[in-house]
Length: 113
Length: 113
Image (tube, rainbow over all chains, first blue to last red; front, top):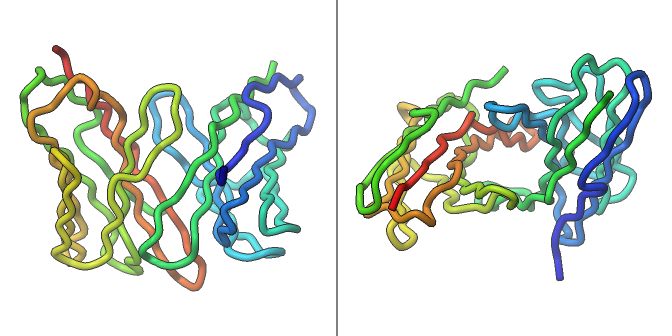
């Protein structure tokens, strides 16, 4: 079955540690996105990528980094520079072009203690 | 930061009521406007993708309209049912050479039997 897989579903980390969230898709989509959701808020864009080896900062990129070495994979690293890393992280992908919806992973809930 | 705004923030209606939500978005760099339904413990799923000014889409009891010139879209639910309870998200797809999908804060709908 085609889809997007995020792992792990729950992640706990100590303050000051970097952590990498996985996002893999087998939909052959060019565009991939990372979003963050905090309680009572919508989805805020962290990073997005349209092609391999290229990505753009979203609205809240500070303290995060990404890579796009393969079309299928778009991992997000939450660095120790991110001041409030505890949140729900959602990865999405889509084809390029206007007439295309985004498909989402199940999300990763990160708790930093 | 791109502003995509939704109203109301939340809504509580009785079964059988009809309701509507608003999404406002920038009028420049428009590529498409998406509506998603996000049920608890699930991933967001696309309802509609609209690209042309004046577009109207319908899926069962749910319909949406689009006005790109003034930068707004409406989502209508006719005869709400308890299973319609979810958060409804709109997303603005812009293309400035890079395809960027920005979400609104969402409208949380609760339909009571």
